[in-house]
Length: 300
Image (cartoon, rainbow, N blue to C red; front, top):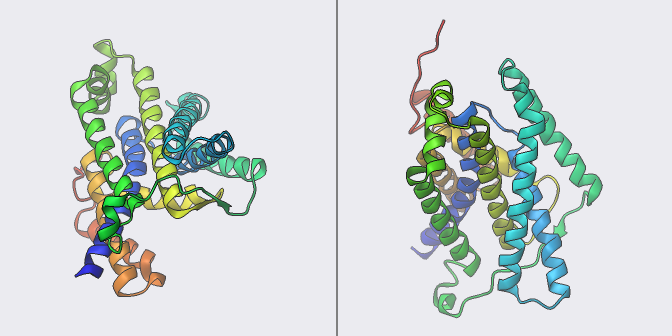
């Protein structure tokens, strides 16, 4: 039973991180129907920013938890700036272009950011400090769950609840929902659609940066390629749950995390990705729009 619980909580941890990244994919798609392939690289930039800030703060004598908070704030601000700038220069000029154009632009941004970090940093894995302290109260169950996993699960849950409240009850959240439903009507009723789209990229980038620092602190190493792998997994989660649906992205991420964890624990880590993508194929055969996605009729 302990082994089952260990795998369950490990899957929940993975799923929570995938959910933070998948929310960015699904929010952008819901607003402008763009698959932002560069979103994974924002996650990677968040992790690198946190590493640089944490190294400086460590030299200055700050403690682990204060470093985590300050490095997290710096990573969120820096990554949000990247997300905002990326939307301005790579996607906004192509907003009225054929749908393939911004998609290719997104792939180009992904490759550019990967190579930018490769040249600015290194191609090797860099050690990331363990910023999450070991809590005394978790020692009796430390064989099932670590302090880092607990922080990741709780942080992700709080962030998702806050995001849900923001979208449901704030003025900007309502503007986001209106823009997602009908962009032209939103413009007619006075909503600043450009501002809404920019805010969507900023929020999505902030969530990815938080995911980057949490998982980097848990795993203990980063390199320029981590965003591509995490981005593909998070995109898979968003599609699995129904891209464009925020609850769907969270559900898809949790299912993907548990599938990988149990496949690794009971079969082999070699087949982790095989099981995850086989599940995606199976669900899309029976639910092409994803678990919580809505099928839309195509105009001819």
